[in-house]
Length: 498
Image (cartoon, rainbow, N blue to C red; front, side, top):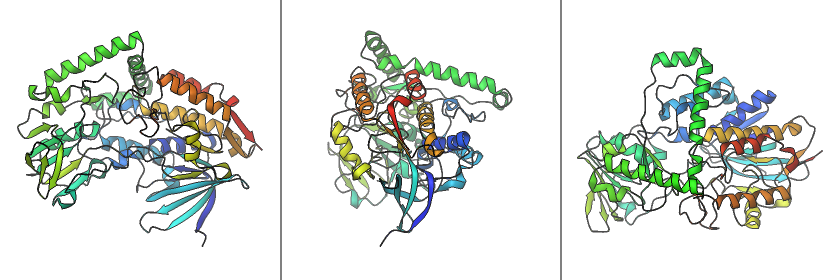
């Protein structure tokens, strides 16, 4: 039996996080387009900021740099806004640009197939509450699917016998009661460094289980007074200049990730600063646990605002003793110690499954087949693949940055997509597709550039694809290069068919 279908539309956007919202807003701003649909698995817009609601969750770049250039926000109350402030901002932008009228939540993307005859995409979805599937046809398909949503599965012997609750930070519930509880936090990445101090004042005792240390750097949050918020509101040019200055400042950190003499000197300085900070701020008994032995920049650095202070509390303990077994009300470590636990909080990161959906391009060719040809996950300028017409990624393979705000990168990619699809939306062309030669040339240049950074294959992190040994995450050039490559002389790499 054929699946029930919804009326065709010009554009389908998968994902209503920052990438999806920027795309939808720019369709409205550039073309006054109302003939589009945006889908997300969550009931509301916001993406990772809808999903991650754990105590202490906040952005780790200045909030003014986490806003869109066309929708700046003068009303942040803190320099590094909380999850609630970021989500409120994203919701307000969605309302302002009427994105909510095109939004459907609680809907999972099952797959999509290009139709050679009609030159359209047929996209399959599943309504999560009912489990029923449906299809919808579109001319342009845009994947704005993010990575920081699906929890990484945690396994340990005996975990099924645990009598307390086990909650991942990306599945937080507002009714969780920490008072008087012995809480085990598993993980020591960006989520854990925010979670531990936030819960330490409520829980009876917090034991944090860590594995690999990260370089920790200091970060001080500041309250933004009502006076300054009013100044930003009524003198928007000042907010614009502040935002620009912060982007320029963050860009100065790019050089330290390069395999150059300057980069090595900068990394050594940053590593020394991180080490000195930990020895100054954290208890001495944890120095060996917290100070990495690997080169600065190989893994994501962590910004500390209250974590080191929390480690001084009598009810907080950090250990790297591996978990051997989970009992009904305790955790047994490899050394044989039994640690009481009423609640287990998983800060173990995310399953990077954003590319698992079945995608078929020309002649039924799958995305997996396309990538096997390249020997790694690959996309031209992170946004498109040859053989997959009218399909685009926002934050596709090798789009990740480690020195600046993601929103800056997202806007650059979206601007390029919006420009490329104009002839299709105006019925001047049936499809747009990247040239095979351009994609191959770009992929070679990309990995050559990655090999000139500290994030090459010798660096062990989630940036490296375990199947291919290649870095699938990093964008190896600076922000100026990204802007120029997505805005300047872009038409030569593309084919249009009428």
